Length: 486
Image (cartoon, rainbow, N blue to C red):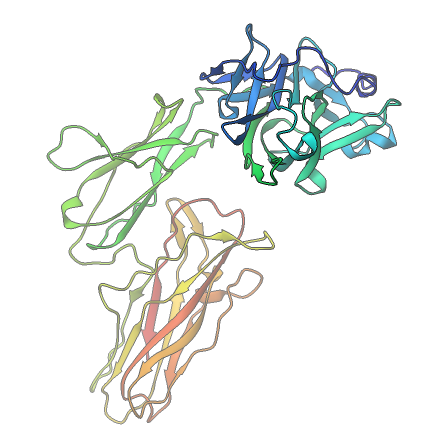
């Protein structure tokens, strides 16, 4: 790594704030380029504000080519070269950049020929269009491995912070029309970042207008390999499915890359080749198992730039059974009495619990999902009405080779219905074992009926509460709940 002398940072901070050279005259907008590019050296107005056909728009003014062109931000990657590395100076005013002596990567506001020189630009905006002849430019979100700061300096070298990601966003500045400004852009770590900007203004007649959030991609350091060695696999397929069961297949990269262009393919018995499944371009493919899909094969391919194939998975084969356990979260075992019977049953067409996709908790410390157990019917025809107890115990959640303990699921049992004269009582609530306890990994009572109160038919249910660690590997997880009646 090349690290410039930290004094260079202090020197850059004392330079002029506004660059007046190379202004674009109102109405003299360069042609809009369509190709995707990486900008790593030269002048560019990264955040270029335009007002066209009654709309406020953010673009990129690329002055690294002759003649200059205007680009869509989605087509541009801004590269902060490794040579942009500097050390944070041992000056109190610059402590917001990190510990003194630590390495940061900075694109300075005075041009250096071997680095990118980004700025923002409102020179295409005309006087009298907006109230106050100004627009408000906001950095609304930063996603990436480190902190981002954009700052200028006053005449004696003190920093004037414009945007800073580590003390709360959005940050906003008012930018007059006919402004062409540059600043120091600082990143605290190598890697890929998305900086989301937004421009807002009020028209002269009082109408507010906005660009809405517009993402800009920055890469600090070397660019990712455009053709990485990626192994692609399909996960989530269960050994067998009953007709009507939900099937969800997920594409898994190893190692994980930024690529996210997928296409799913299928080949059913009698077909010679795999054919593309229309409109299935997400990381997961969900459908319903039918008898006609038995023995069909599925694979997924990963692309970049639309049509450049990067990786292909091995095919997986779907097994659709006429009977047996579907991709289910309930497997029922029954103990039957010697005289009469005690029977626990579920609707064979309604014994799959599909919890919603897990969401991050408000505290950000766990994945959460909630749902409802499918109805459990308990029928007691034994003479003497000795009473009964129905309990459940959950095995581990599995997704391919990944495994998570069943203790992370809890429930709140309920009595959905009972016959006249019965005295069925719901079991106690069991909390997920995220912090402590064993959740449903330990045998837990769903419902009971004391002697003399159990004869007849009752229906039990439960609200389910799942809490998983944040380091749980991605995938579709399935566990089996075994119910026992005594």
